[in-house]
Length: 311
Image (cartoon, rainbow, N blue to C red; front, side, top):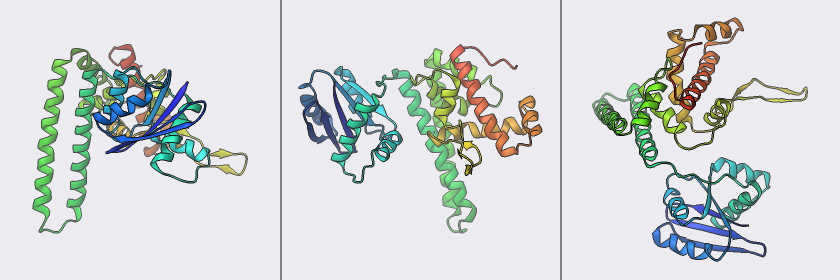
C-alpha cells in the first residue's frame, strides 16, 4: 500500500507520497488542471490511499475528482491530525511538512474511506449551512445594537431586518426542497415529533444524520456532537468536575441548546428534570443533559424511521 497526504489551501495543493523506498513531493494548483497533474503522479502507484483534512470547502472538488477516478480517499477532521502531530513531537510547520504529516497519519491510523453524500443531502447541507450563518450574523448585529451609538443604530437595525428577510427566504427554500424530496421530508417531520425539536433544529439534525456518517449507536452520535461527558481524573491528585467534551462543531450543539431550554422551561420531560433536580443538579446541568437526551431521541427516531413515542 502507498500512502499520500495532501495539504489543501485555497490556491494550492501540497502532496507527499510515501512508498516503501522514498518520499515524493508535488505542489500543484487547487484547480482542475492541478487535479490532472496530481493524478498523473498517483497513477504511477498500484494501490494508493490518499488522505487530506476537511479545510473549509476547499477540499470538496478535489475529493469528488479523486473518487470519480477510483482513488481511495479519506477526509479527516483537522483536530485528529493536529493531535497526531503533537503525539509525534513535531517542532516545525510548513505546507510540505504538513503533507508528509498527513501521509504518516494515513499510514499509521488507516482512516475510514470517504463516502460521497447523495446530491439531495448535499443540497440540504448547503441550505442548512447558509441558514446557520445567517442566524449567527443576525445575533452578532443584535449584540452590537445593545451598546451602539444612536448615530449607527438605524444602520444596524437595517442589517437585522435584512438578515430576517434572508432567513425567511432560506426557510422557504428549505420548504421547497422538502416538497421535492419526500424521503428527507418524512425524516424531518418525524424528528419534529420529539418535544422541543422544531423546524430549524430538525433540519440541522437531519443534515448530520443523513450525511452518511456511520454512527453505530446513539452514544457515537452524542460524542460526534461533543455532548459526551469528559472526566478529569488522575490518581488521587486530580479529580476535576465532569464536563462535556465539546468536540465537534459548536453550531451543532447550538441547534440543540434552545430546544433544551424550551424543554426545561415548559417541563416537557418532567421525569428527567425531576430526577436531576432530586440529585441536586443546577438548571445549567439539566439543560445540557436535555441536549444530550434530545440527540439520543433524534438518533433513535431517524434510525427507526418512526415518530417519537413518550416513555
